[in-house]
Image (cartoon, rainbow over all chains, first blue to last red; front, top):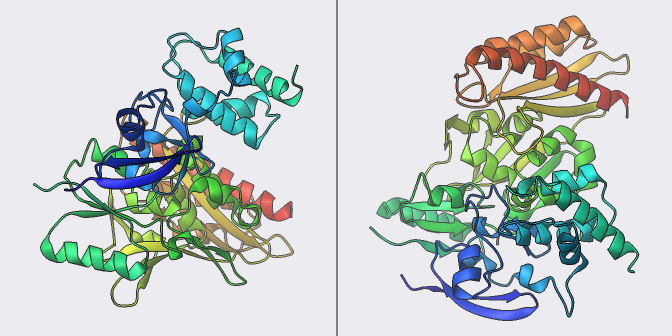
Length: 158
Length: 292
C-alpha cells in the first residue's frame, strides 16, 4: 500500500509528510517530523502525555491518525515557547511541578489550552480539565499551583 | 493479509459505495468518526488491517440543527463542540451531561455521540440518555436510508443494527415539549475518568399542576445493551413524581436489569444502584422543569 501524502501546519509552519494509514499523529510527529517533545505514555488516550491542539481543540495525538491531519493546524509543545519560556513553563520550573518530565509537555499543552479558553479558572476547574493528564511523580498539587500562578502572571505580567 | 488503507470521502454516496464494495469483496472496512475507540482497538482487540473510512468530511455528519420539531446531531461532531452549544445544553441538559462524562478533555475534543452509540459498549454513557430523550438513528444506505430507535439499534455487546453498506449519519431527537427536561446520572467509584457501574437517563414532562404527563427512562451498564424501561416510565406518568412513584420507577429499573458481576460491582449491587440513579435522575429532571 502506497504511503499517504499529507500536508498540514505544525506550529505555524507548513509540513508535508508521508504516513501509513494506521500511523497515529503521535507517531508522525515523533518519527516523521522529529518533534519528540510530544510523549507517548499509554497510547490509549488515558494519560494525556501526547496532548496537542488540533484546529483549536485539545486532543490526544495517539488517538488521531496522521492522515487525518490533512489541512489541519497542529500545535505541539515545541510551539509553546517564544524567545523566552512561556509563563506556564517558567512556573512549572519555579514550583518544581515536574520530576521525571514525561507528562510535562502534555500538562503544559493542556494547561495552555485551558488558560486560552478560561484565563481565570478556579482550582476545581483546573483539576477537572487536567483529569486526563496523569502524573505519577508530583502528586498534582505542584502542577495545580504552577497553573494558578501562570494564570496570574498572564493576567498581570510582571 | 492486506494493509491498512485510509479514505476520507466527500459525499454520503461515496461512503456507501466504499462500504458496499468492501462488503461484496469481503474486504474488512470500518467507519472512523472521533476515533477514540477505534484507534485503541486497532492496537489491541482488532488488529486486522482494514480500510478506514473517515466520515468527518461530510456536511451531513457535521450537521447540528435545532428546529421547531426536531434536533439533529451529526455523527461526526465532537462532544466538546456539543457541550459549548448553549441552546442545545438548555434543551437537552441530561444528554449533554452524559456525553460530557465520556473521558477526559482530550477525549471530548474528538469523541462523538454517534461513535459512542455505534461502539455499543454496555456502559456507554450517552446511550441511556439518548434513549431517555427518544433519539432516532438516521442511517445512510444505498436505498435512501432508514431510521431506527436508539433502544433498538444496539443489538449486543459491541454490535449494532447497521447492515453491510450502512453507516450512522446522525441522531434525530424530538424537540422537548414545553415543561420537559432530562437528566443522566452514572455511578463510578471516583469523581472523573471512569466507566459506569450503572447509569440512568430520565426525561419527564410535567403539566402546570406538576403532574407528570410523559416520561422515558433508559438504563445502562446493567445489561448487555442499554435498555428502555417502559415500566419505569409508566410508574412516573400520572404521578406528581412523589416518593412512591420514584420508588416504583426505581424498582422497575431493578426488575429490568440483568447485570453481570465484575470488578466494577456485583450484579446485586448494580440492580440496587440503578434504582437509586433512576430516582435521583428523575428528581433532577423535575427540578430542571420547575426551575425554568
